[in-house]
Length: 477
Image (cartoon, rainbow, N blue to C red):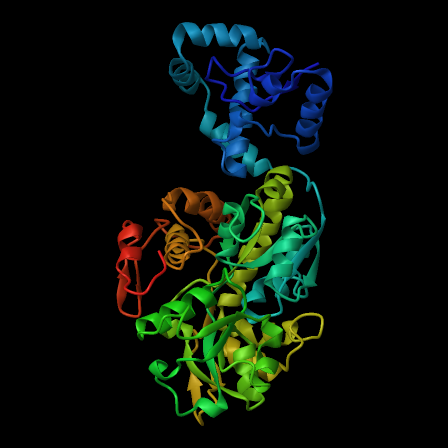
């Protein structure tokens, strides 16, 4: 009995078939018939090997490229894997690769294989979302037909909070989910939960948050006056938590000693503010604007004024889902990227506000959503502001965004020790997948996956993350 492997076809030490004599880690570990059969069943169930020989493959694109290379090399050796390995021992893998490339257009064949795609492995999907405006593309793609356009029947499921979204995603109850940008990093690293590789091929929104204070604190606009305040954030591994910590620390307050930070699900923010359980919160909209609407809070500052263009929410799924269902994953990502670009156009936002307002989505008055998406809003202090980019939408998952998030996780003690910042960023934030889809849809693609940022006047250099962490006087690390 044998099965094809996706090992490196140019490595003489790697077998391209799973047999009892196979050198891969799974087969070597399978010392009896029962465990050998279980290993093969696991392989067949996912239509891919789950062994150490494929740990160098990080994306669906990598798997497809490897599959093409293996098919060609097997054909050249007439499926004689022993002959292939003996030949490689004699001349070397690099020589074989160069020889094949000189006579076979490997690049064109790989590109054609990807373009050809194939039938969707799964059409009926469950995608979770927390009812906030950051989830606009994921939500509006349902009533406005973006999923259906790409052959998918998606049930978008309203989720009470981020812990629920994380747990249902880890359990496989959701095929994919709206997540906070730090979440797939933390989940992949096993910080705060069981470790499971998650990928984030698209950001949903940039900007779009605010610090809200109770109306009783209109005379306390200086953060130095906030000692003893109780603040809400939607989740520990959130830009809300990291931006609030950054903001108060830059004003001389220690977020772990001078204020209290509590995790509160977004839909419960306004009620807790009204009840006096919170003095303020850094929350996603529409709950900042809802506090103004209900006259219990005012907008102290937009987070875009802390960091212009900061990421917030994203589209994410398990690496297993993407690799097991590559065509479905591709169609879903294309739906999300297209919906995100549609949301980025201001002329579409009144239509979108009405589409996502109903009870099964945001369950908010349309005027509240319009104030957020259109950027013309009452601030609760007697003024009407006009900030068109109060919230914006850009799907590209910059690796430098992940690096910044990791610096804050380390700064505040969520992770310790040495980190390979770029490696983690590249494994979780799949810029290559997003770039491919953006090109297919005709959108402009950045020429790099990293850039520096200015946050409250301080430059973040993505090439010097440890120096950045060490530069802060207030920190846990």
